[in-house]
Length: 93
Image 1: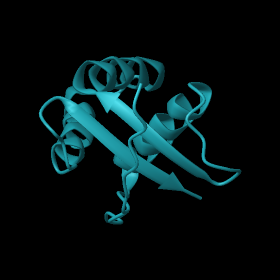
Image 2: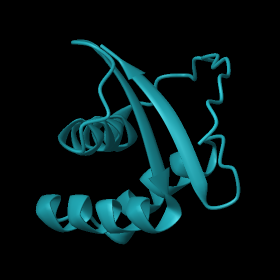
Image 3: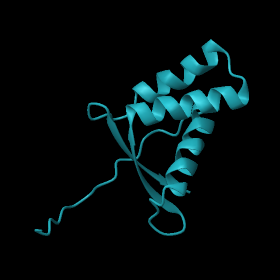
Image 4: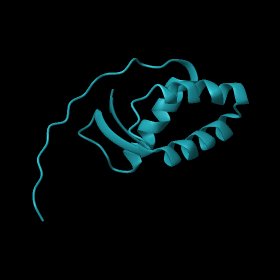
């Protein structure tokens, strides 16, 4: 197996507000549980569109969100830098 070395760079996105912010926190918690941490306050988080859809369904059900509220989060999700059906985010708090 060959060793590949690359450079990652971070382009900070605008922090969402409202339900999108709460959903972003849920995304970070999910990635933390998956063991994708970079230290105590940083996190690299890869997701697939299917994973995000499932997470949003759970988020909406737990909070009893309306269709309009789910659409608010979906609108934010569509602004993220998707690579096909893949999404890689960096969270820092």
